[in-house]
Length: 189
Image 1: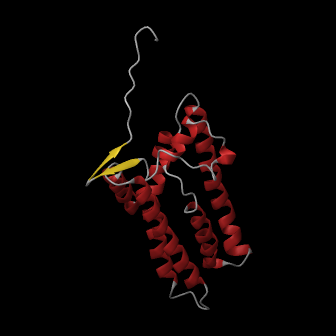
Image 2: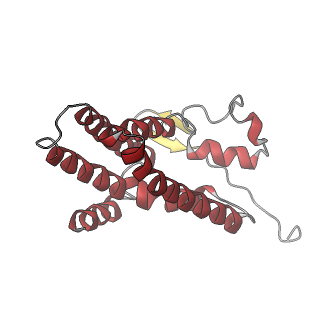
Image 3: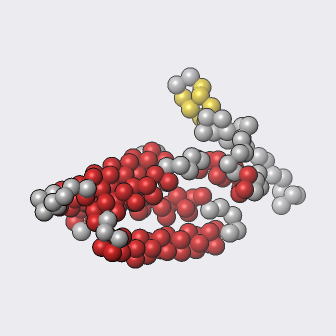
């Protein structure tokens, strides 16, 4: 419990100072590696001496989740859901989050005990962790999908002409965002 508090405090302090995409990638890697280690430990015949290592790596998973994925899930979802449907998008996001949390806690005892996987159940969770790395779209691209009204079924093949390198133009050593100012006449409002 104390480690979780320190991890969340670290997340609050570093949340806006670090790139969210890199933070999520690092925390996902920090979760994937211990899952693989715990799964490999579970392949040993006698687990009495190695179970303490599983507990240590479980704490690494807990801290990695609380540093980035736990707190940033809400922040990123809130930033990506724009427009009039923001409340509905957030509601669906929260329902999906709690459903998958319930699904993991409901199936874990069965996979661990009844299926006889023991600590090797972490191989299943490591595989599921890898699926989160396959997304590959930036926040700017997702916002552009909604701005350009691109249907979701075309997201995997759609390319953006103006975004290029993450929406940034490199000007020497300084990077500037593609920002355009639009004047609106008072008569149009």
